[in-house]
Every structure is written in structure tokens, then in C-alpha cells.
Amino acid sequence: MTGIIAHPSPNCGPRRDGLRPEFVVLHYTAMNSAEAALDRLCDPGPEVSAHYLICEKGRVFQLVPEDMRAWHAGAGRWQGKDDINSRSIGIELANRGTHPFSEPQMAALETLLPGIMKRWEIPPPGVIGHSDMAPGRKFDPGPRFDWQRLARQGLSVWPKTAHGTAQALDWAALATAFGYPMDDAAATLAAFRARFRPWGSGPVAEADARVLEGLLSTS
Image 1 (tube, helix red, strand yellow):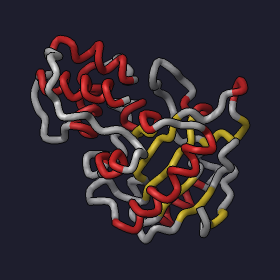
Image 2 (cartoon, rainbow, N blue to C red; image 1 turned 30 degrees about the horizontal axis):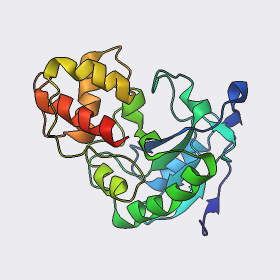
Image 3 (tube, one colour; image 1 turned 45 degrees about the horizontal axis):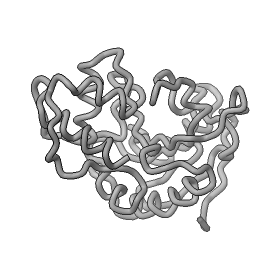
Image 4 (tube, helix red, strand yellow; image 1 turned 180 degrees about the vertical axis):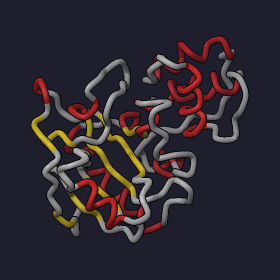
């Protein structure tokens, strides 16, 4: 991708134990401006960073080289694997979490992702949200992020139309098979619904299980 602006952050280090990127983790900054987020991600004090920051107007800043370990994911797991920082590329999207993501920003993300996925052989199911790997602790990129749009371009996944037979009692096993940690089932249900069924409420329903069944058949 051309036009990427180099803005190095000191907050990075080697990937541990020979690990390499197998996931892309999407975030929102939850700050008032991209400039404020850029300052924070490059400030050695907070010890946070990401590989890329995409502003509302679609400008892309690279803060950490892809072969290095950025400090964006924190504690959490996906597909039973921990140290997600060593296993992922982190992309921050300048957004407070209270409004839709801009068209230039989404277009820039859609231009950036294919190169990352090709370089590191990351399949569409490997593009996840921060809330997926750290449910209850993190909520980004939130229910306003358009996952279905990414999936239409092969840049993430979206469930097939639910015509399956899964029951509500199958939900935890299906969620684990998809990749979710199950330390707190209620938090995981909320994270799952924020991404795939933001209109869902109440206890686990058959519809939740069937969405996961559709995701597993797509992955």
C-alpha cells in the first residue's frame, strides 16, 4: 500500500519465542482525535502502541514494523492461544466508539488489510476485534464497526444464513470452537453479539448458536 506515513513508536520489541503474526486485531482509539491517539501510541509513558493507526480521513500511519511486537492487545486469548501481541498485527482506528466509522477510514483499512494478510498468510477468520480476544475487558471496535463489509471482500468472516440445527445449549462449545475464550460466558456472549448480533439481548438463544454454526461452516 502506498502513501503510508512512517511515525515510529518506541513502544515495541521482538516477538517472543519465534512467534509470527497469525491474527490481525482491530481496535478503536476511544480518543477525541487521531492526533491525540498518535501522541499516546508514541509516548513511552503509557507503554501502548499498534502497528498502524488509520485516521478518520483515511491517512495511514505505521508506528511499528510488522515483524516487531507492538503493545496493543494486552491480556486475552484467541483460539486457545495467549500472548496475542506476539501473534498479531494491531490496527487502531481513530474513533470514539460512539459513532460510525468514516468511509475514507474503512476504504483505507480495506486497502491495508490484503497486503498484511498476504504477507503473513492470515486467513479471513484471523481478522478479529479486540473484544473478541478480551471479552469484558475490551469493547472495541464495537457494534458500529461494519464487519459484514469486510467479509464481503474476503477480509473477515460473516455467518451464512442460519438454517442449522444448533440449540442454545450448544452455544458455549460452538463459541470455543470458533475461538472465543470462555472464562466469563456472559462477557463472551456480549462480545459475540456486539460483532454478529448487536440487536440480541437476554440469555443465550438458538439464534446465537446458529450464527456460530454458520460461522464455523464459513471458516
